[in-house]
Image (spheres, rainbow, N blue to C red):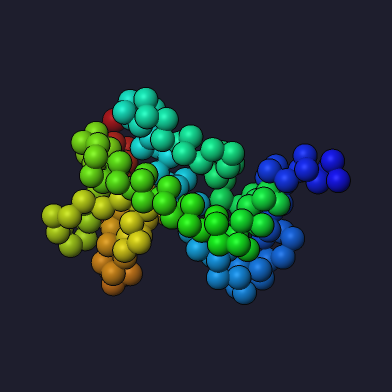
Length: 171
């Protein structure tokens, strides 16, 4: 019993290894994994933001600090709270607070947003927005529809390749 009590909050379960199909059948786990992935995408904004550090925003996760380290390790308590619905509610609330800081409350974090280079619309995009996609090579952010409708290469990757080629021709 003591061992279980000790292990309750330790992130020692890698669910993808234990049961790779689990995420196909447990909708709550899919939602929690997406929230965790978004929080990981938000972390770089917070660790470079003085206001976020002073407000200790990342500590909103309290005893779930492993959520800002990776998205695949779970504790027994995480699974219990998933089953009861508490984890989803808690993470959704934290996600909303984090997104509000980045997108509305903090000018420095807002300035780190992206513009879609494919459609060039004026809205500011963030990698954790539900309607965006990231280039897997350079991590530029685009509207999801623009990214998948555009069969050519990422404009940012193309620019970087062009610069690299120019530098190799003109040392």
